[in-house]
Image (tube, rainbow, N blue to C red; front, side, top):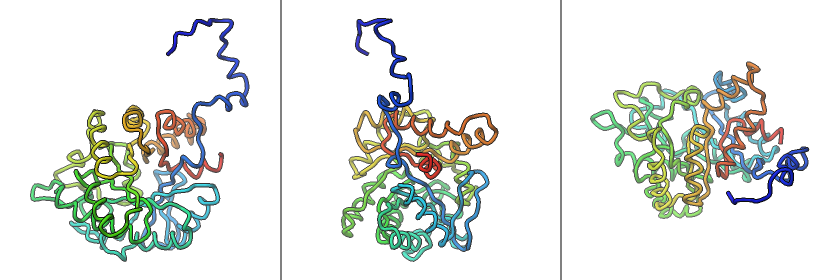
Length: 331
């Protein structure tokens, strides 16, 4: 900070805090609907939306209710959604075969969304965990660990099918080494050059994902290997910068840090180092904690807005948050 010579009473910093109008005018960071992406869950074989107990105000949507939800989000100025599927258990297997079925539930829903709301950006994850019986993000080897190279070809195929369905932004969340380059290559070869890639570059093996697992009804049994063997160690930040650098070099258009508030230092380091479009995911556990405290009257509801503004202050360009619709209404 510069060594200013002016001292009290000439410098009274409270002058710029004296009323809301001046506070707004000199605000260094602001939050708008342009900064918000709403994650949405869509479930096969249901007729009405289902409430998710651990995520207050969030639902698993049917093919019908998802369109009503999108319509409301568009009316509020939300420009993008991240969509996550909940598929029938009988369609899950060891290899996540349903992920590469061009007529699978998610691909059909994406086509319907884009037909009805072409203006909204649809983000779809590339990973096998919604489709596997073991709940891992890829296929397993003989040791029960995820086979990195054996998974890449399946992820390529999954990404291509999603692009063909109309997905605007492919979001690999699997954390396999080399997956951004593999997916970018197949998209280029098949003339989907303008399909964007949002890389979950710094995705930590966090304990903040619990409510999400309930929401997507993913397998709780991971065999004899946890996701620690491919998601990032929570103690590391230099490794995160290494991951981001690799993803950028392999063709990512946007990079992301996940989770959010416990990793604001990572968000800041990524943005300052690479000057790339940088997104952050306020994950289910973060949202659930804040909502629970608000419901108990331990915290004001304004704490959610404050939490989102902290991401902007750290350098994030956009935030995936379950509170997007709620905040958009207040904005």
